[in-house]
Image (cartoon, rainbow, N blue to C red; front, side, top):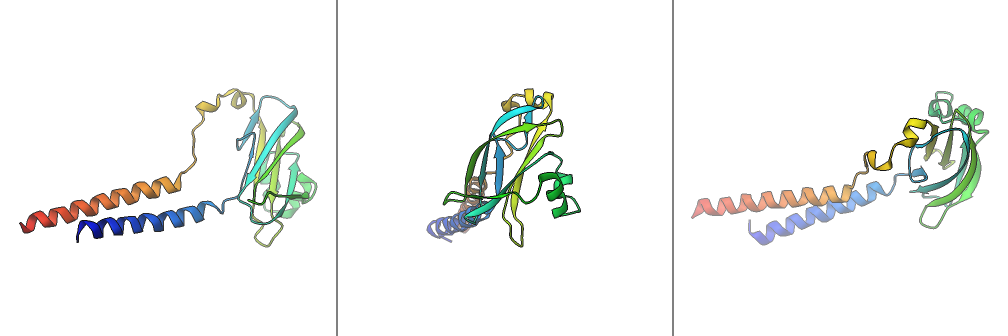
Length: 181
């Protein structure tokens, strides 16, 4: 195989990988509170919290504020009953931006039990996201730099993998050429 063919194959693999990587990450629905999920506060009280959601496909979704940060109580085996009991129902409809994002600042009273915010689609699949606001003085005092960045850059991983594969193909092709000399 010539170098040109190897480069062409490597670029084709990279482009196909980028195509799939972009479409897989675009369907994740997220919701953060002040840029974090979960958000920790030092003590109960009144807080202004900026909520940011992304990845929604409908023009309108439901927004709910729950009186606890216990996700088992909200989404537990009782299904919608937990949502009704802990959050007072299915919330209210909110409009999203054209790109499927949501941004709002909520002033909320947070008790020892914390709160949770939900942004979800009332559909058969019930897709959505929740963010917890947890009262924990130790975690609230932690510096953001101390927390691990766990975001996965799928497209970067695909490019690196394609580059390694291309390099391997080039070495393999070069070694075959040297054996025939």
